Image (cartoon, rainbow over all chains, first blue to last red; front, side):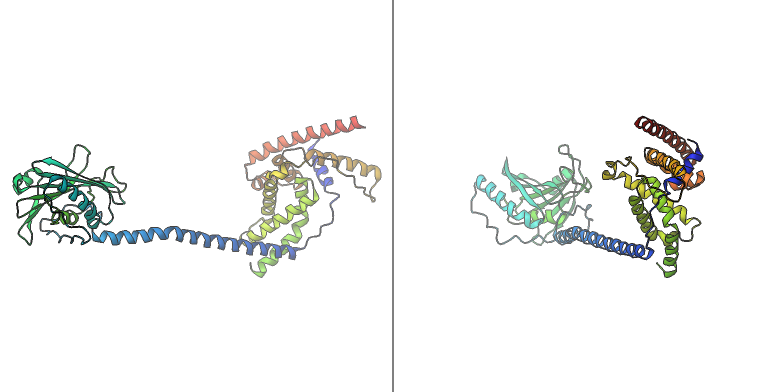
Length: 260
Length: 176
C-alpha cells in the first residue's frame, strides 16, 4: 500500500459520514455549566482546606499560649547563669494543703516525711512537672539524699535534694571549692543562699547540673541540684538544665524541707 | 469570557466541528465515539479559549486537544477491554457507479479495518500526516514529541498498517 493509497483510503473511510447535528450554543451552555461547577468545587476545596488547617492549627496555638502561661510561673526555663547581682526570688510559699512535718526524730520517719513532702511540693514549684518517682536514702552521718525523677512535657530529668546536718561541717568555702559558686546572697532571716551555675560535664549520665545551696542559721545545709534532660530532649540545647534558679531556690529555702 | 471571545469561539466551533469529528473518527473508528471526542475537545477548548484565541493556530491547538482527549480515553480500563475491529457495515452509495463504488468500499474497509489494528500513537501520526496533510513539524507539536519521533512513528505505523491490510486481504481471499 502506497502513501497515495493510504490518503485515498482515509478520505474514503470518512465518506459515509453521518450528518452533523452540532449546536454551538448548547455546547457553550454546557461549557459554562462545567466552568461554574469547577469553580464551585475549587471554592469548596479551598474552604475545606482552610477549615482543616484552622482545626489542626488551633490546638497548637492554644497549647502554646497555655505553655507560656505556665512558664511564666517557673517551668522549664533553662537559661544561662544568672548575673552575679541577681538576687534570689522569694521562695514560693508552701501550700497549706501539705501536711506539717510529723514530730518524729527517727531517720525512717524523716525519710518518709521528706519523700511525701517533696512529691507534693515539687509540682507546686514546677507546675508542668509530674513526679515519676521519689526516693530518699540515708547516706550516713545524718545526711539525707532525695532524688526525684520527673517529666515536664519537654523531657525527663531529675532533681536531687541533699540535706546535711549542722554537724556535717559543710561551709560555703567548701561548697564553692567543690562546685564553684556565685553569691552568697543573704536572706531576710540572716541565712545565705549560694548557687553554682557552672555547666559541669558529668561522667554518668553525661550532662550538666546547677545547684543552689541554702546555708541555714542552725548550721544545716540544703542543696538542691537540677540536671539536664536525660535522654536529651528534642529541640533543647544539651547544656540546659530542666529547672530555673528560682525553682531551685524555692525548694532549697523551703523551711519544711529539713532534717527532723 | 467576553461576548466577543464567545462569538469567536462559536464561529470556530461551527467551522471546525465536522473536521474534528472526522479526525476523531479515524482515531477511534466509531462515529458516536468520534462525536463524544469532538464535543469533549471543544468543551476543553472553551475553557482555554481566552488564552488561545489570538494564537496563530487555534485549529492546531484543537487537534492537539482532540488527540490528548482520545489518548486519555484509550487509557481508561473500560476502553481497553473494548474491541472495535469487527465487521464494518457496507453502506451503498446510490449516486455512484456500482462497480467503482464497490472498489471504493473495499479499499475503505481495508484501510479502516487495518488502521484499527495499528497502535494508537502510530495511528494518530498516520491520520495527522496522511488525512490532515500536516507537515512533520506540526504533527510533532500536536503529538508533543520530536520530529524524529514523528518520522519513526510514521514508518512503523505504515509498516504495521501494510501488514494489517495484507492480513485482512488474505483472510478475505480465504473466506471467498
